[in-house]
Structure formats: C-alpha cells, structure tokens
Length: 497
Image 1 (cartoon, rainbow, N blue to C red):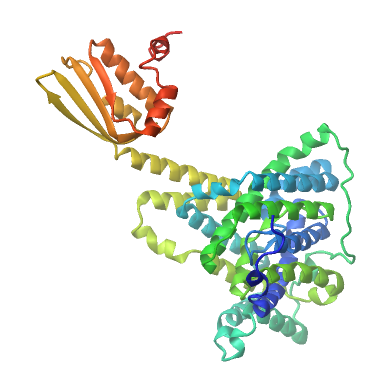
Image 2: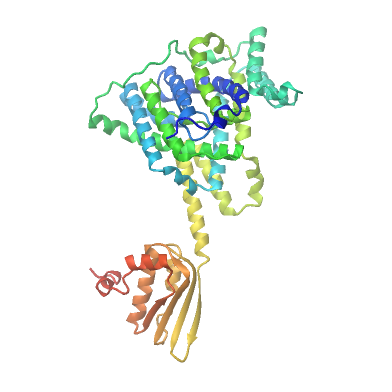
C-alpha cells in the first residue's frame, strides 16, 4: 500500500486545507463527546479515537479530504458490548474490526459499491441529512430565546459572509461563525449551553496500550460478532461517503485502499485507547464546503483536535453549542439532495420507491447498513422484473418437415424462466421442435432447469427436440448444469429419487 499520496493531494491546497481543518476540528469535539456518551464510555475514548483515526487516515486513506473519526453509527453498535463486558473488550473489538477491514481491502471488496445504484446513494444522503438535523434538535428544545437567536445569527453569517468582497472567500464562514458567536456570548455574558457542558475533556496525550483481555477463543467469541458488524457498517459508510465526495469534487477515490486505511486507523485507535470509527459524512461535507480538498485538511483536523482538547480546553469549553448547531444545520441543508424532491414527479415509480425506502429505513432504524441493503435489494428486484419483460418468443412452422421453431430473444433467468416454459405448446402434433436461442442468454441454474424441463417434456410427448444457437456462456452453463442430454440425470428433474 502506498503510504504517501501524490504531491497534489498533500500540497495542492495548503491554505484552504489548514483553515478547513480548523473548522472540522472544532466540529469534531462535541460530536466525539456525544458519541462516547452513546457508547457508554468516557468522553476521552471518543476524542482519542477521532484524533487517531483522522491522523492515520490522512496518510493511508483512499480519498483525499474525507474526514474519518468516531461516529454515531458505530457507537450504537458498541452499546451492548460495553455494558456487558466493559471498555477493555471494546478496545479489543476495535483492533479486530481494523484487522477485518484490512482483510476486506486485500480481498478488494470495494467493488461491491458497483452494486449500489445512484438512487440508493441519494436515499442514503437524504437520510443522513435528516439524521444530522434531528441530532441538533436536543440543543434547540427547552432552551431560552438566546439559543434560537444565536443559531439564526450563525446561519446568517454562514450564508452571507462569503458575499463580502475579498475576505469572504479567504476565511471559511463556519469558522467565522464559531469565533463571532463565542465572542458575542462572552462579551454579553449570555447564559447558554457550551461545549464545556458536554463533558470533561482529557488532560493528557494518548499512550499506547494493549487491551487487558485474555487472548483465547472465549474472548474471540465475544468480540467477533461486534467486530464483524462494526467492520461492515464502517466500510459501508466510508464507501458511501467517498462516493458522495467523488461527486462533489469531481474526483475519484480508491475504495480498496480506503478499506485498508480504515482498518489501519481502527487498529491504531484501539491501541491508543480509542473506539472504532469510520468516515463522517457531516464533517466531510463541512471540510469540502470550507475549502478543504487535500490530505492536510484531514491531518490538521486530527492534530488540532488533540491540541485543542488537551492544551486549549479552557478556550474550547467556551464555544456555545448554538454555533456548532448552526454549522451542522448548514451541513444537513447542503447534504440533502433537493433535486431528488423535484424529481419525484418525473422519475419512474420504481426509482422513487427505492430512494424513499432507503431514506425511511435509515431514518427510522438509525441503521445505515440496513437502509442501504434495503435499497440495493429493492433496486435489484425492480431491475430483474424490468429485464424479464424484454424476453419474448417468436414462433414459426415448417410444414414440409412438420417442424415447430421457437425463437427466443432476451434474458432468461429466475424471473423469466416460467414464461420461457409457458411459451411451448407441448400437445401440438408436430414431429420435430427446434429451440433457437441465438438471441437469448441463459444466466442461472433456474434458466437451465427451465430448458431441461421443456426439452424433456417435449421429448416425452414423442417429439424430436434440438437446441441451437447457444453462445459460449450459455453453452458453458448448460453443459455444466443441464441434464436434458444426460439420460442418467433426467430422472432427478422429473421428480425421481
């Protein structure tokens, strides 16, 4: 694996990457603390994880400018493990998660993203935008009017500051929002919730430590199910986030390298007292929107996060949560695919069902993997149904030789196999039947079984049957699994034992 990326990925956008990294580091702090609370561990576990993962992934990841750290989706999977077995087993599970992800990278499982349709990606993106917005609601309920005023002011700065001549494009507006609202709260003495109210911050640098768990099969039996789930969800969210950033920046990412990178980062996190993490759609969008494009932005986010929480905690604690809420609302608005709403009137019904189903499942279950799997399954079923309708048969008759000719065109597989067998008139009084599949293709065992069934039934009715026009792929699958020309095997198709 290449440890260093190209010169362009590192040094092509230094100023933009540094400024964007500052914004992301500030946004990571409350999220890392919140995710630690969700998982049931000390806030420093999430903060150390975010530092380790962001720093390591900057060097070994497959997508420049993508932010990886502790995430809510991963934290939810850890709750039971932490509750039943404690922190040490979580750290062991984190290391095993990394090992499984590295293995997935070498097995080139990144190719699985080719099965995720654009519609599923849009549904996933919209669900994440909704979840990001919903995550801010606790900070906007049962609060004083000052919080609403500060949040509104923050959104105003975020969207209006870029229009200021000269300086508007030099400094990321989210960073300006955080600085301005913090100063306003301090100067006016407004009593609102701040980052310091989220929980205590670590006062020491992380150190290398190996989880204090027995190295035996009993431990493996405990952590393996959790590690498998963490590895799968982490890779899925990372691949999806990489795909979204590819579209936003019109660049490509290496999914298999990303899988290895995520694995190495999680191994490092587990060995430094951190929990497992993955790519973060919200922070990645913040990075891109703030001008971050290269690996320095990811590295800066991780390093600055640690510096801030360890050496500048007194200042960081003063940042009002309203400022970070404004930034995250901006992220949710920017993440949501608004054209997809307009497209509901013009896109096919099947496309809309896939997109809406993906969004609803993710939002209702908070399970990103389940939502994407639902979308992929529905998209596959709709595709199979659509393709099956392109299979048809033309029939002709040669009176001189008393021969019926069936010419099939299209794809023959599990969803069109029954229609294939129904095309034949088994009781027709003809001497010979020719099945022409020159313009057809047999895809699976169900299709081969349908051909066997038709040929054997026609022959049992006293007809000579010939199959012609098989292409190489069709010939191969029929030779391997077909039985209509293998007398010893025919009895199995007819129901014999």
